[in-house]
Image (cartoon, rainbow over the protein chains, first blue to last red):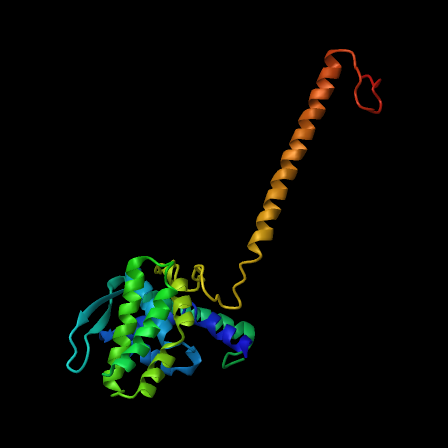
Length: 114
Length: 156
């Protein structure tokens, strides 16, 4: 059980942030929306509250931008958008990820043509 | 909203804040504002009016320990386009309840090892210098009351 959690956290590290970047690739989204969506994915095992520090780091790193806006119903929302740096970072990850995945598949024997 | 319901939220945010004392002020404020906005927006969207529903929102958010630990983990790591991909994020020192897999203990013995290594090297150098000094003084003048050294008569 603990082993499974450790594996999940190890796999999540370094990949979750690109799931976040991809979520705001085509439209701006507000924090709760991003957090809810990611927490829905059981595989990612991401607790809602731990995603806000990640959003903060991506903003401080210049990959995301944010601005507060009034919401039609309820409290103000903080909207995140992808910066040009974030966009190129996402593109770079996409190519890296494909070759990384292929290599792991080949070595571990999880490829479709294994 | 009833005052006792707000208390649950206030208490939760206070518990998180207590654990963030090691973070820069702006990051601390940012996270607390994000969490407060999250709770408010969940409450509005899910029409959560009972205390039970509110506690459920807080439970999904995660315990203050877990949230604070994530904040420390992300605090030092500025993502760069090339460095962020598979490089492990530097882990900050969570002052309260560190995750079980982080063991700061090995740091101390390793540091001691360093000191021993340095001392050993210094010791060897000192012994060598003494040896050389002894040899030179013996060459310069007649050998006198030296420690029992083998083969003092060796000539080249």
